[in-house]
Amino acid sequence: MHHSENNATIHAMTLSQEDLERYGECLAQREKSRATLDKYVRDVRRFFVYLGEDLLLTKERVLQYKAHLEQYYRLGSANSMLTALHSFLEFIGREDCRVKLFKVQRWMFLPEDKELHAEEYKRLVAAARSAGKERIALIMETVGCTGMRESELTFVTVEALQNGKIMVNNKGKCREVCLIPALRKKLLRFCKKRGLVSGCVFVSRTGKPLHRSQIWKEMKKLGAQAGVSPQKVFPHNLRHMFARAYYKKYRNIGYLADILGHSSVDTTRIYTATSGAVHRRMLEGLGLVS
Image 1 (spheres, rainbow, N blue to C red):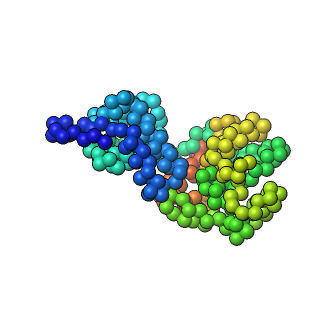
Image 2 (tube, rainbow, N blue to C red; image 1 turned 135 degrees about the vertical axis):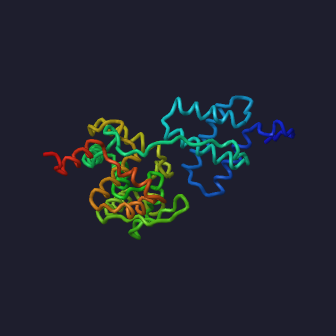
Image 3 (cartoon, rainbow, N blue to C red; image 1 turned 90 degrees about the vertical axis):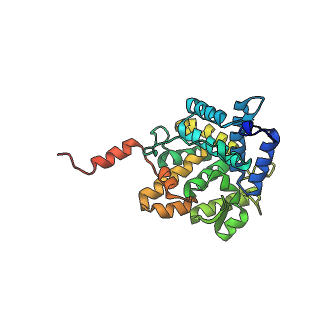
């Protein structure tokens, strides 16, 4: 890291790849999840690419980068990238280069082409089983029945199944994930069939926990067979489907936030968003037009 000695140019600073490496190490020491660490480093690296070979950091260049993000990305995605950059700037002691996030109105309705319905989820699971793909069928059922993050599937172990509860330690918080008896029975049967006696249940042929990209690919292959739009078929959408189903049934957003491992119910509200069509039917149900 090269700081300028001259007061006139003290606001300019040349970054280095070593800064980025040390930042990644710092995130690891803070016990950030692997997914968070990878995303933040990836987002900061994107800023490095934007700066070009000179890697000269100034407030003006960050403002230009913000304008670049506004042009090429959705505002929500742009804010996510800026948040990662802000974290990096704080790490190197350059908070003066931080910029304001974009103001985004809260997402009230879920796009209809993205809303995964419970019946579509069941068709995906059925398609997996008819193709003899029991592992991905159980992965979808586990996320669909518990609302777990796909990155938390590593906590689904043989030992956890034997105890009847899954303890998830993620994002600095520990929570218990309950398994309904029918799902637990299926998972234990799967372990017995696969000869799994300990450790993670959802593993590759080499015995390593499945990566989210592998789960994503397997689900995508099932979409056409199940007659489900490709835009709806991705692991995290199962979590959203669970949240909407739970909220529709019990209307307890605070408890749902605890189940999902959210620190704020504002995040949970995004998960419970339904399509505009559903909202219209609800308004019609009020019977206020004669």
